[in-house]
Length: 212
Image 1 (cartoon, one colour):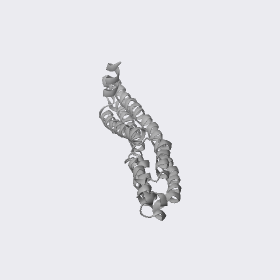
Image 2 (tube, helix red, strand yellow):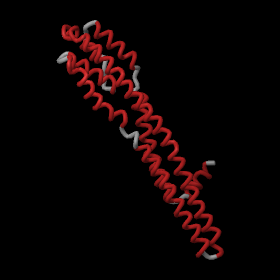
Image 3 (cartoon, one colour):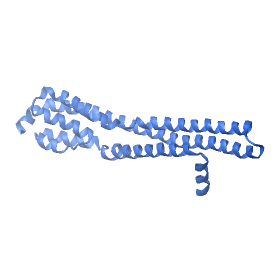
Image 4 (cartoon, one colour):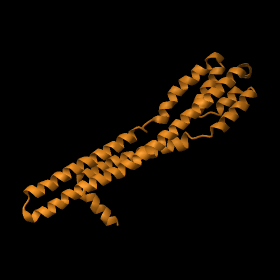
């Protein structure tokens, strides 16, 4: 099985190495985005907000700030908590500014997966065209003894590069959709809980100032 895979890969010529490079690039992007979106940035938003809400209602804004780390949602909530100690009328503006800063972190590099998929398909198509050129050249100009060999080589090049290009493109597109959907869900959480916290802080601002 391993030998046959190697033989198919080698039959595709140099284009297989170009597609392999694109594949490695796509894998790197997928792994990096999975780590951030499903591990580092993926927090229990309802639990975090409830902890902040209870702490703010107790009048301890500084402790509520300490509950927030540098992940996108906590960073936005922290911006509101810090601003309420200065000017409660600017809480929403401070959180909106924080959202503009963290949103690119959630969507960073995900769109490159679609580019990787397109490049893989195009490289496979280019390999297919060159393989067909080799095949037709064999039919029209090669010596009779070489025709069958050249024809088989051209068809093998065409089919191998097409298949490998699709093998790379399909999972890249699937992960692009998956990661984009996750990023959108995290952005929706940020919008939801930033509005909730803004209402909470504006109503409890005098308590936060006393705590200061």
